[in-house]
Length: 536
Image (cartoon, rainbow, N blue to C red):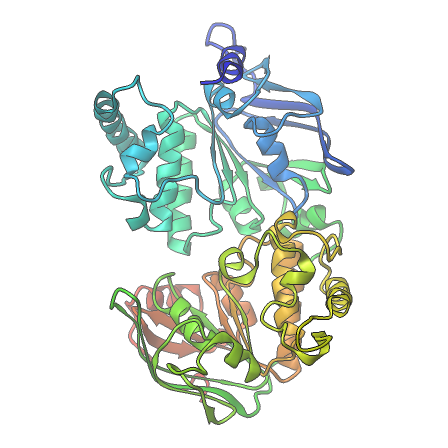
């Protein structure tokens, strides 16, 4: 253990009951500023978080929310300002010091070792001495107590890689509680959860609050803010613009505070005027590498000028459907594009062949499948299309100047911030990364756009923009197959809705003739298929 870490913990021990003022806030940040070179991430931010409350922090991507929380958790050191925990000023030199001060953090991308058990992950870094056996025995007892008390039931002997995303998040919360956290920071906690998992998380947070824990919730989802928080603070461009009681505000007011202008929270679009059938799927089956059938004989179609929304709990075949259509995965059955059959298993079944046929694909996971994060924006903007004649100088060299000019134009059109083609993809916020992927695929003028989770981890301003681009493409006569776990997104964007459960289509509905309740039942495999009228 480093001397610095040890000194940090000693310097930031949480105030004791005898020294902490009774009515002191759980956290108080005063005049916090942080710059990264010329970029002012946080500017003179002050915020007070009361004990035993859920305090939301919202703002667009790049507003400075995560930087502020990283300062509180010891990942960054503020250039100016002070941190007060339970009424006393503390110096948080690193994350160990934050933990000693009673602060725990659950990150959007979990910090778990996938081939370790739940129990091993919980005690990792918090072992009692050099012998693991006593530590594991002690942790098992305490883990059961915590699981029972906070409804965080997880099998302590399960491997992380075998758990659902929702259960992995519970492990992260248990890690923080095991380290005796009184203050819990959650960064975009529902970004990878299904609606049912998100509802369960909210029940857990309510239980934590009832036990006196203080929770800071970083999210861009206004519905969650209104549902779970007591107080909400709004950040914009590195500054704190407002702190209000949740009961005294509205989603519309919060959106305007976040973006600095009025924001449309509902998609405005004209009724669809479907044309010719672009995509036809008949009896499609997909078997994964483990021999498990993921798609079980589905039939679908999408017409020009319409959006077919596919909803379902994650893991019910939607991902595999997109992968087959995008050329990432083999399948059996029949797929036709513009009346011509597509190869599902041969040499013309890859992504390049799909793009040549007029299919563009915005994958569900932009980090793993949509971008190479260490490459610059102009390089990412041409992936999959680098063989196009307009980007070739000759048979051996690409015309990089032409690619950079195209990238600059696309970044401006799609409002990518900052509009710098030479910036590495990892340096953009999640919303701007998504815009890069969307620009690359939409600007190819596809006949069919496949788009998975279009606004996952994206802030309210970018969501509005992305939805508008999808609708514009539909109105230009293109066919769009949309997969999303966000039911409000499916209902507002789709012209028709198909529900998947266990690799099958449970049924189709028109948005005007259904609701979240009915769709939720179908997603759970409860409702029977209502074959009929939708889309006929």
